[in-house]
Image 1: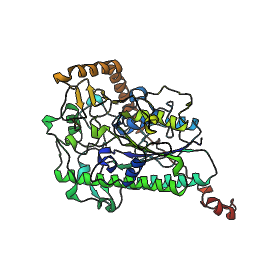
Image 2: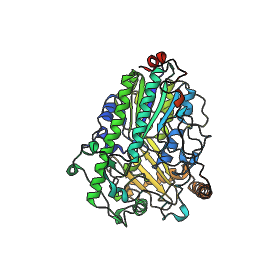
Image 3: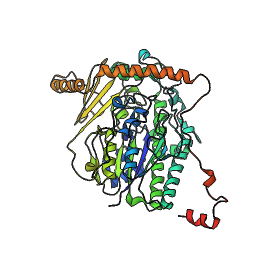
Image 4: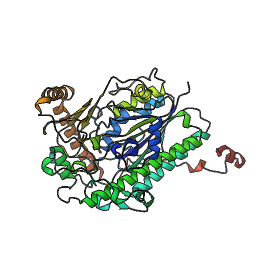
Amino acid sequence: MTKPNVLIVMADQLAPHFTGAYGHPLVKTPHLDALAERGARFDAAYCHSPLCAPARFSMMAGQPISKIGAWDNASEFSAAVPTMAHYMRLSGYRTTLSGKMHFVGPDQLHGFDDRLTTDIYPADFAWTPNWSQADERIDKWYHNMEVLEEAGQAVTTYQIDYDEEVGFAARRRLLDMARDGDDRPFFMIASFIHPHDPYVARKEWWDLYNDDDIDLPDMLDPDQMDPHTKRIHHGIEADTVGFTLDQARNARHGYYANTSYFDDCVGKLIQTLDETGQRDNTIVIVVSDHGDMLGDRGVWFKMSFHERSARVPLIISGPGVNQSVVNNACTHLDLLPTLLDMANDGGDWPELGIDLEGRSLWESATGGNDDVDEAFGEYCAEMTSRPIFMIRRGQYKYIHCDTDPAMLFDLSTDPMERTNLANDPDHAQLAADFAAEVQARWDSDAIYQEVVASQRARRTLYEAMNQGPLNSWDHEPVNDVANAYVRNHMDWAEAGPKMRL
């Protein structure tokens, strides 16, 4: 059997709740809708850690952040950790990354044959949190209420510039692979920055929506907030600077517009697959790194295990995939074993460098049954000073932090997570069982010590690296212009036909 190509299209900060594909009545996502109509839509998919770099590292490695030290947005992703790109190479694939993956450290490939663009975020230790001063904002950290003030329209932004480059480079590589004579299947990730704040969109996407139609967030008063939400509320300056309902509506307007823009990026990649004759032999996966609270509970952005922040879209479409809606809980950790089943027709995988924590979702995607309905999460970054853990099993979600009261929600009856059942007598045994499971699964004190030690070392390294000349780890794509288009060492009569598809 011919191995399928695999194209992962990744959004940044896209909560499934705000897409047409997942039932939002206003947001237009026709290309995601079409993929879901032909494929498997996973309705309880979670990031393992609700922050950009930890989410991506855990997804790439199929490992919890506590196992690979992926604590925050300034944690180094070790070159010694095998990733899905390494395993896909071992499975006979050529591997390409176009766009954001927020790799921190000198290894900017992590198994990809090549990387077509630089990243949009720094690859150094600049964004290291400090749990010894947990109430202080990270230097140069941009998450605050200014992004709501800035929401609106623009001809272009650095994010639009970036995504236009990511999309062009990915489409051009798809064209190149269709005409280069290499018959190996491809594994490509095209990773975009939208609809990540600051919620600024081009006019053609903004005009898809009317202000009066934008739904407002379901907010909480500060005295109704759980402690972690209060910390986020303070950290993003929502308690001091605050925001108005008009600003919330405007920000959501921009987010919806940029979600439609991301959807259009997906559509252009699908069109290129069609044009190159690769559509029928390519599995397309759409996913995000995490979601966006978008004003729910009175906070914005991510950094918590509440649904808008921690849930991600996951749509798989292509050869062998059954049209279905999968309700079982799963996480980013499950993507790597799923890819290994896709790439090896459910047969023998390459030898694993590290045992994987997740399970394959390929059985679910192809119409089979999955007996597992659970997901686990870890968060060890800003707005907390102790590790936060999450267990989602069946209809229940349990959230634990040593410094905070436990939270237990029944998502089947309380999807907005407004009723904490942790101290409810009718759920006392369930809450106790979850608490015992947390204690058995995680050593919170040991993880805390690792995080604090890592933060201290990285702060020292960052300060030292800012003395004297800058030696950047940021990825610099190779542009081999000497062999591009037509050059004098080429036969002009052969170059034209060879590059025509």
